[in-house]
Image (spheres, rainbow, N blue to C red):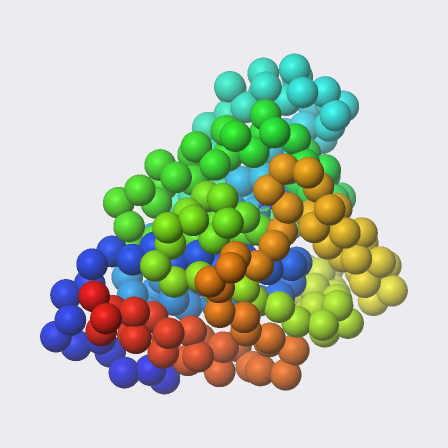
Length: 234
Ligand code: DC
């Protein structure tokens, strides 16, 4: 594992991680946050929480007015509990529910709307404004924190990403096939990359890391090297 950052007072950096579904962003972000003692902001979980509420209330995901109403009433909290990130929606724990494949698709749909993105970006900026944050999503380095100190674009082949997501879903007892998982992921990638507002895109100055053939540990080490270089330069 990487060396501790001894002797260097940590100014709270902003670390932005973007990339497509199941590229390993959460694993990387959690590890970095733990190593640096930073706050971890899973922005996808916030869009998922909204999507879950939309499904619970049976709302049309294209109805901006209704979404605006829900956004007004929503309070999302990301809290750490027993070493795990829990997602609270109006104080109800929805951590497990929001990982269902239907919620992934709905999150991808509602996140195309400007009314939704404007509110989420506002919340996310408030969470990271003090620095000392690792935020991951699709638009962190491009829109939420264009001034981030370190920007990572984490990628992997669609087949490898689908295999990972499939294994994760099966371990949770979900009855899905690898083919379905791959198709759903490609559909979501396409929507996330082609939407008009804040599409998934590599930030100009982002370091691209391809995790297709790298283990989680190797990815963490590569990114920690980048962070240490940044800290040394401050
Ligand atoms: O990272 P994730 O798979 O949990 O994200 C779920 C969906 O939320 C994703 O398909 C698109 C949307 N999303 C987004 O538009 N912008 C972000 N910063 C994070 C997620």
